[in-house]
Length: 88
Length: 259
Image 1: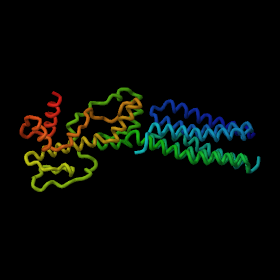
Image 2 (image 1 turned 90 degrees about the vertical axis):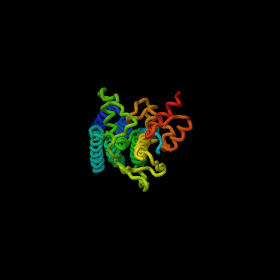
Image 3 (image 1 turned 180 degrees about the horizontal axis):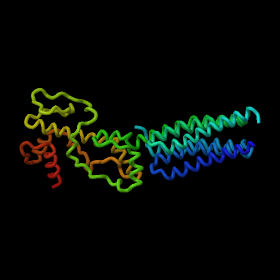
Image 4 (image 1 turned 135 degrees about the horizontal axis):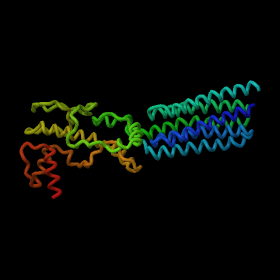
């Protein structure tokens, strides 16, 4: 019963992720793409957690999600700084 | 099926609702800043609720402490990243067409123009570049930073705001020099350092600049007033016709320097 719930959550988050990926490739502006990447980062962290809960091995997947959230934030900050330049 | 599981499932479903709302907002909203707002607010709240549901699911454990750590990281970094993207967007193009409004052109949102102009190619080349020495006669939307009063001795046929440090009264052709000063102030607006910096950045990224930029570089001699220019031209041995404007004196000087 509860594995079905985690499966549904996994499918819906995956559908959101795929829609965001498609829209990221369809947008023309560079900052829109950056916005989508930053939104996908949060969803991927949640997706890793949900996969862990579905398998019943959340103690392993939580560490991966922790490191992924930090790395995704650092990537987004560096990209935003590179595109926008320094504050005047 | 305990009460703990029911609370966890309810929290996760509400969080999923906010995630879907954020997705719809990030696709459907018209402006870039509105999309940024939808992403920042909706994603943070959705992640907050889903992680709270997972914490309720695991119970008081070491796992819930780790999920709390992920939650703290996401709540700290998501608005921070949104803010950085907003700063990047403001530094990259002019904010809501403000700089083009200052130039007297019609206001155009840069993001919408970018999307449309890359989708349909006939908008991509710039329309006819407006000739540089004739500025638009319509008034600027903001007043000049230092409006100095007219000198008392001269009759002023058209009261124009005039920048203070350059105002030396020229008895013969005051109106011509005033027009020239108006031109120079308009050129100063066009050569705003931010805009040229932006143009440089766009050129570095391989995109063509959106703003209409004048091809001619600004030289320091354009800042002088008419008396100094006249003395310089006489020092170079040039004939200056009577009643010539500052623009004509400048053209004479540049053409003689080329030869």
